[in-house]
Image (cartoon, rainbow, N blue to C red; front, top):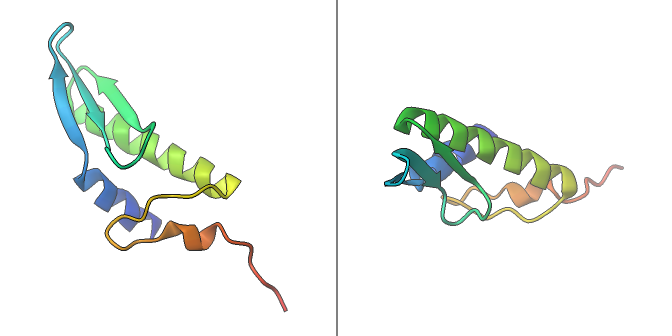
Length: 84
């Protein structure tokens, strides 16, 4: 489920070339604070995927809310588990 979430989130990524230094900027608009800036588009995509992965790991660890993407709700995993 986590891999599917990352794949779907990456489909919403937007990229642009920064004219001043000819690098690529990438971000996922619905996920605040996840961005990348690299010299090539491919390295920007990879860096963005890694940033998203790290961001998700931290949010899950801390129990912070995560935006639902493509009906994938990772917030179900941040709730305390009830054991009998």
